[in-house]
Length: 71
Image (cartoon, rainbow, N blue to C red; front, side, top):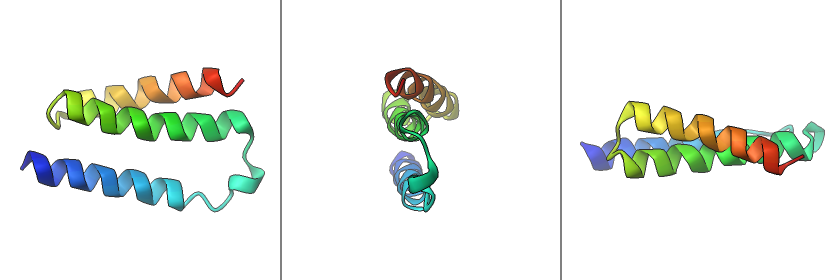
């Protein structure tokens, strides 16, 4: 079950990133926030063994960090 959740999360993150067809209109800060959220979600899922709270928390923290790095 954990493996299926992790694969679904990874596929979703890749879909979101590849679906951002408006990369040209996004600022560097917005791009960094999206990338940070995707990476944070995957890391959060891996650390929490697929827990929803860990995944969402990781994505939120990753998005904030990416936003600050993109300044």
